[in-house]
Length: 327
Image (cartoon, rainbow, N blue to C red):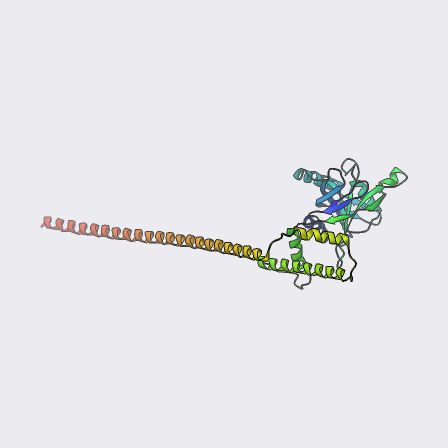
């Protein structure tokens, strides 16, 4: 998540969502039954001007919280932070997260700890990310920075004014495909879904494009018929999008597509031919080895029988010669 969290305001972006948000949700699922929320450390990178913070990773931090006090395992947090920064030297401490949208005195105390000097994010403000994990409700994210309040140093340590900052969750095409595949199982009783083949993915993508084109066409027709208010910004956006489309004739597209299909078929045919030749060579080699072994065993057995017969014959002849001499 990247947060433009300067001393004024900015944007917060979560990137990549499957690594940071899923880690937070997994931490929430493994919490104790009597624990209302869990907290952890956020790590990421800042822009050169410090206006944007990109949250790339996070790790859980143990804590206990009651009505009267809160205890955070600071030693564990410092050790884990040191190890993580050694493994990922480009990342820095950017803030902390909590799995509850509630902001209280304990939140201010933890915020001041993460934003303090030394082991904190100072001179940059710490980002506080809240992820709602209530069962049966949508996952909602909010991002804050804080400003110090309090008339005395003692009061300022456990007081802070949380300032909401905008954020944006970003993900690539691969993450989008994965999330769409996962979301396809939410309405099924078995909570599972099959992986689409390449042809099915292409078919779905084409259907989505056709749906978007139909929706845009209906909007343009409604504007022309004065049934919908026009928007110059949207019109400029559509004009720029259409300008990116190549200007080619349908016949050229069909010819190029057919040529591409023929090339694919030729490559598939060559691949099958090579596979068949390799399989045939393996079979011939195996047959030659089998026949050679059988011939070797047959000749060995024949030689053994001849040798044994010769020894027997020689022994019998020698015996007869001995008896003759004695007579």
